[in-house]
Structure formats: C-alpha cells, structure tokens
Length: 629
Image (cartoon, rainbow, N blue to C red; front, side, top):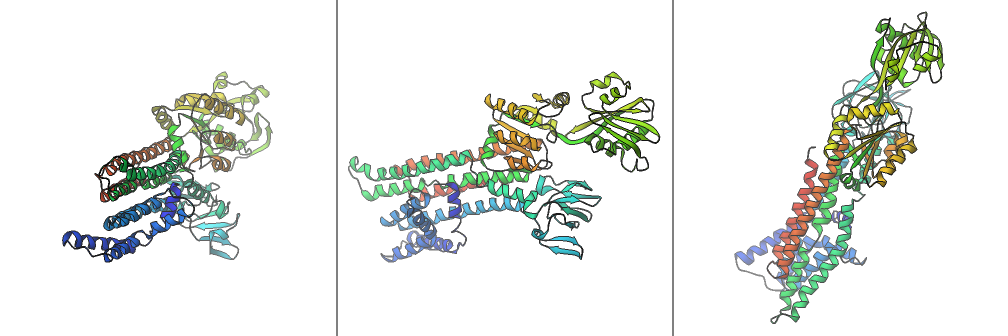
C-alpha cells in the first residue's frame, strides 16, 4: 500500500462531514437507549438503524475497498476495515461495527485535514505571484495578466506591490522585501541594473523594471514547481514503510485467520463467534493508517519548514540524505565569498591617496575587467566624471596604459611594471589577493588590493559544521594562494585552488571513493557537474546560475552558507519525528494485538487504540511545521 496513494484516495471522500456526524448521533442515541434505559430494538429494526449509521459513516471506506478489490488489491486499510466491520455485523455486534467505522472515519477526517494543511502551507508560502501587473507601453500604462507580458517590456511596481516577473531594475534605487524567495524579511536595497525577481515586495518607492523572463520562466515559478515536485519524491523511510505495509498487511490477515481457527484444535470449549470476534479485534488494531499517513505528512512538514527558512528541497528523499552527510564540499566564489570584488587596502607612495585613486579609476573606467570595475565603484563615477583618460591601451594579461590629466598612468599587475622597467617594492609579490599596481610618469606610485569579501556568516557556518563532526573542503578555480588564505581564515579542513571543472569532479569523486557521504555547494555553471555527482547537490539560488539550480537537489535562496547547517538540522528533525511516529505506532499495535488475540481487548478498545495512535502521530508530524530553527 503506497502512502501517497492512501493520502490521495482517502482525501477524496471526506469533504462533507454531515453524514459522519449523523452516524455518530445515531450511534450515541442507540447506546443511550441500550445502556441508559436497557432497551434494544428488536431484529430487524436494530439492524436497519445500525446499518444506516454504518453506511453513513463508512460508505467512503466501502467504496475505496471495492475500487481496490476489483484491481485485486486486498491488502490495504480500506479492505481491512470493511472486513472487520462487516464481520462484526455478522456476529451481531452492531454497535461495535458502527463504532469501528465511525472512529476510523474520524481519524481519516483528521488525517485529511492535516495533510491538506501541510500542502496548503507549502503552496501558500511560495505561490504568491500576483495576477496582474502594470505594463508601460507606447499608449500608456496598462494593467494586464503577467502571462501576457513579453521579455523586454517595462513594468511598474508601486510601493506595497509584489513583483510579478523577473527583470532588471531601471530605477536608480529601490528596496524590496525578499522573504518569499530567501526566507529573510529584512529589506534588500537594489540599484539600477541589478536583478529583481518575482515574489519580491516593493517597499518604499515606485520601481520601473525591464522584464527579462517570461511568467512561466521566473525564478519563483521554478521554485514553486520544485516544491510541488518535491512532495511526490519519496524518502527512503517512506519507501521502506510502503514496502513494509505490502508485507505487513497480508501477514496480519493470515494471523487473524490463525487466531480464528487454530484454537479449534487446542481449546476444549471452542466457540467460533468468540474467536472470530478476537480475529476482528486483531484486524482493526493492525490497520497501518497511522504509519502510511503520518510519515509522508512529516516529510511534507519538513519541506515546508525548510521553505520558510529559504531552503528548497526538491524531494523528501534529500531530507534523509542530509542527515547522513559527513563531508561538505564548497566552492569559494559566490558560496563562501560574496562573488563581488571590493577594494580593500590602498597604498600610495609620493602621491596623495585620493589622487592615486582618481587617476586609477579614470583609467580603469575604460575597462570591463571585474577588478577595474571594483576600483571605479570604490571611487565613485561622480568623483571622476570630470577626469578623463585618453590614449588608453589595453595590454593583454598585464593591464592598462593611458594619459590622465596630462600624466602617463600604468595600472595592472607586476608583469606590467616589469614590462616598462618600473621598480616596485618586492613585498608586493608576496600579497596573495588580486592587486593593481600603479605607476605615474614611469615611477611606482602605489598599489590597490582588491579582494572578494568573505560572507558574514561563513565562519559561523564552518564552525557549526565542525561541531556536527562534518569535514569541510573548499574547491576553487581561483589562485591557490588566495584559496589557502580564505580556508585559513575560515578554518576549513582542506582547500584546493587552480582547479578546472574536471579537477573539482576528480576531488569529489576521490572523497566519495573514500566512503564519505558528500554534499557539494556551488553557484556557477562550472559547478553543475560536481553538484550532480555529489550525494546532495546544493545550489546558491540568489546569484547561482540556472544550470546549477536546475541540477541541484537543494536550493538555498538567500546565498547564506549558514543555511547549509539549517538544511542538515531540518533533515535530522524530520527524521527524528518520523521515527518517533514509527516506534509509537508499532509499540502500541504490538501490545494491543497481543491483548486482542488473548481476548483481553475488545473492538472498542482496539479502535480507540488505533485512532488514538493515528491522531498522536498526526499531531506529532504537524508539530514540525511550527518549529523555529
């Protein structure tokens, strides 16, 4: 019996509850007459009254049992309940037969409500795409459905509105709430030219955005698809329980038959109805509904909890994988560092520091190299708007040469200085980070250190991984010296630089061959092969490439390394709750099965035990959705 089938089929029939409530009312009235006034209607009136209540309470169960029976599927909870209750009617235990069906249906009612809530909470969390958008066209502003907007068109987002489509900000500046994508509600200020994603909420000013992706291709649409697909992908625990139920249920049927007939050969005063009744008790308590519903519900809750923390698991199976990971392999740029070069230290010699920066920025403004862009951004375009560079020449692999304010300026690496026979302090050669060496009028004038800033929570994340006993490894295509420096700063166990994509694959494969369970975290296109190779591939979804996000098993939406630890915690918490439910259900069932076979427990006690265990398991599974990490 597949857990997902049980959920899907059982949730189709309990949408209206008046029939069940009426059945319970009839049962309560009949029990009051029987035990309060010592009055039992004569046959066949008692059969008609109880039979009506039975059908009102259990027609859904009977229908599903029949549907499965015609497909030769007899070993399921619906068929089990039908046999047990019809058997109770056959021996005249009408009230107990109705009670078993009514309480079972109440349990299904609660199960369906819990499952629906879990599904709704996941969908509501992410499916926040607005159904209209303001498009700025030649004939004025138009309000249309986002599906009608084409790439290249311009949309307007007012304060308080949700962004409907991915795009590029055309306004100078705007602040957004990115909680739907990242799990972080703090404002994120974007500047002109930066990427804006569907699901963000504009906070304080009218924003104009040029659309870069169609509605169905937006990052939020892809996230929603990931989460919807995730609920269909089963974990190893779910698969185990599904296989277990297929074996467990026929065994229970066989044991029930043995309970009914074997005593005939050993008991002198064998009474068929007595042992048949005990077999019915055995069948009722053996119903595996608590397992097959509460377990997938626990995983739904785990996926929802992760989503609220800005982590998207593409399948519940990856929740289990993260609990077994003992090595985290990470890319450097964009994963542990921000992926954006920033000016760190400025050293000037024989020249004012601000003048050095101004001359260098004017020259670098003619370049598209990331390091040059970082220098220009540090100085500010407004500062150099009246300072222009002429006769600019790019010397491949070395740097730039040009004239600024009548002075000959060189800006590049040490090879550029050597090329023009300009002496410079030799300690510069020992600097591991990227460096811009500047010469003015053929004389060394200073240097600028440009580095990729380490993310704020990177050190905390690595420390927590070590606390969990997880080995940390960093792989990067950057210079080995830079990689070693970052690794030393963060206390990473192993680090390797100057790696091509195939080099990263070799390193990860070697770790796997040594028996390690690996999660790889990356963000670039070159990381996609390694993400696919790892036991769990994790993509940084904010700045990450589409190829890596598509390949990854887990997506971290806000690019924070600390979310890797959160993903592990969610996996372990989910697994803990699921196994609590398994142990609880099996312990109670084994106990009451023994009592039922020995004639100590009756049908009332069996159904209360079964429904009680199911409700406790459901409540325990639902609890995960409210936990704060």
